[in-house]
Length: 441
Image (cartoon, rainbow, N blue to C red; front, side, top):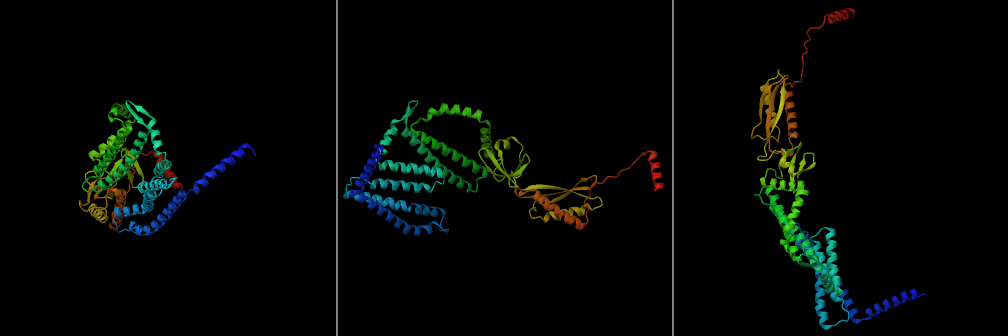
């Protein structure tokens, strides 16, 4: 047997001896037994409690907030039981016993980290954020369990860098990042709840609701960054010159983006275009689904969603069918034969318009003679609809079919183009040839 093999065997023997001496310790066995008992009691208590809480969390008759509270309590039952039992065991056990090796306190730290993770997991749906929370919580618990948390904190305080006259350590930077992430998460939830509440206000127009929601969200984000920078120890006034230079660079480099952002604010302020309006721009006809910071979402009748930059809505010609009133007048030109009675045709057109459910009766439909064409008497049927977002072409088609049916019943002719050709000055050879051909046949 060589020296390397003997060294490995000796190391294994020493590890086995260390583990054996660790397990032979009476206090260690007692603590392992206590921890096993805590896990079993927690399991039984959780099973007995959850079956009572679960129906309350799934009760459809309860208010949504109360259901969320019961669901959070159901999620936290096991960590709360385990953490409470661990803390009680720490108080009682160390009052009457002084172990040579401490296992219960590290176990309590892990139980606390588990409780924090389960609490946060109810509010965070992203797997990446959950992994980050798990790493931080259980990492701090592990450092605390092995007694390395204080040494790690001291080590982080020694490393750092300077910004002007301000010294920033690695610990300050980590604290600032943690506070910033927490504030961004909290303010995001607060902004979402605030926007939901603003949308429920009946007296605010949609454009003002969008504007207030954006202002609130932007303000909360700036507040989060300001608090995080102050926590790190930076003087916010020192960023004034840097902010001006960055603003100039953004103004030149992101001119189109900034133009769209400013145009979006103008649209929200002057309320010329707001969510729900039916617009037509560059051949695109549809209704405004939402106004975003950079673009407006327009959904057409065929389900296509066009993302139109806000700048185009400011600089181009836009037809807003519902700007001041949702009622829209539609014109349908119709031609009838000169042999037909125009008064009868007008009555039939008005009767067809009254039979269409989407055509409103106030204002009433009108039908007028607009001129005498080359092949027809031109009349025009004018009517109003109050739901242009449901389409104009479909109601025009339905009306024309109704007019067609009534014209056929009333024997009203719809003409088609005709031309009479008068031939003058044909050569004599044409008549002689035509006469010869006729005699031959």
